[in-house]
Length: 123
Image (cartoon, rainbow, N blue to C red; front, top):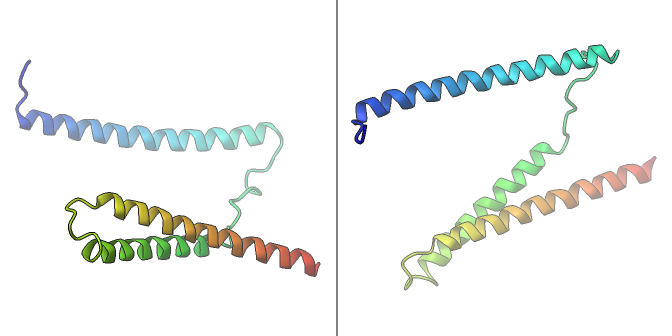
């Protein structure tokens, strides 16, 4: 079986992807039920333990996306003006998206830390 034609390869890919998807769903539900049974065995009520809301989640995502957007915009400006002589500036785009995205996350951390400190000072 040296050469497979693309028809067989497409059918095999479809079968493998479908099986992988259903195996993933089975695994998620199996582990969820197993976790609930373990809680019941230890005398805990699984209905009481709901995921906690993250109050600063929107701030974190917003600042991350704003930072990534600013990095992408700055990379475009630098690519079209300062680095016009070079052909391949892909690293510039990735670097600035990473730097500004990281700055956005760091800003989010500072805001959260300041808010928590202010809240604990009031109490």
